[in-house]
Length: 403
Image (cartoon, rainbow, N blue to C red; front, side, top):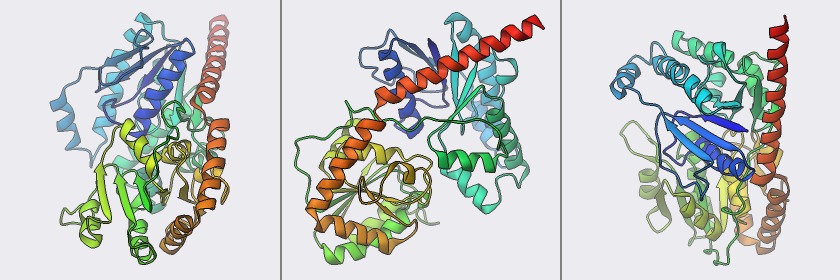
């Protein structure tokens, strides 16, 4: 198959971009050709010797135009509209020139919404999820203002019109069906995958009493809950050290960031901000940390939980979203109530105290990831879903021509 991925950006190490990157390599190893269409990031990735099977097409666009469009975002989602029109303009030539069989778009990027009305090939929409959608839904603002309502309408059309919709979890599927009123839309659950050749245990010793947080330093990821738990943990383990890997976000109106706040409160001897790490570097911290914590208030899938477990790092995570579906409490990880700083502190303390419990969770988690979430397995599931969708699309096209 010739498969095409649409993604707004392909130059960072963000979750969706990493999904496209790793899935492209896995599909290429299965013998497929993969084309990635993006506004940014041409030539930014190492495709592990598979450059003859993976191609990045960077769409040229007027940066000044998009900069101007963002000024009007509070009134009208002009950037989304412009991006959709660009895709509709450039995509047909790419599809024709490279004999594309199917394309996949992101839910949050709404990449294919303008193209769907004149599609040449079937379109898959992947429900990756994004915390902002859940927050807006909970606050009742998902479609309250004109801009939000227009975005909601475009998003709904994007999902409803797709020939295939896949999701990272049942929990996020149920949320999407409710939020965008698409209860009857069929959704295939294809979970998050992890490349076990990249994310794997090592012989390096784990640093004693080291706790890793990997993700954006923002409230939706539970950074505030962890901040409340830190003094309780330090009271029991005064030598504990907390590592933070990910994009730093604002803590308050004075432009102070979360990393600055944490360092000021607990000192550099306890807080280490690592910044946004490369895949190689984040793997090393998974391999050498005592515990990884994921205290998110909501997670559609939780990529970090798969990566950490694949590296043998015992995990504590919130009992939210898709995390409950892939973590068995006290078997492949510890689950705590979301927003409960006391429970988080207790869980960290328990794992730091009990070596045998940590080793047992680590081993069982590694077995679970290897059996159920290996990238090779998920890539084949994805390819099979694509093939079935292409077959249905072609059959429907034949019926239309006969009529």
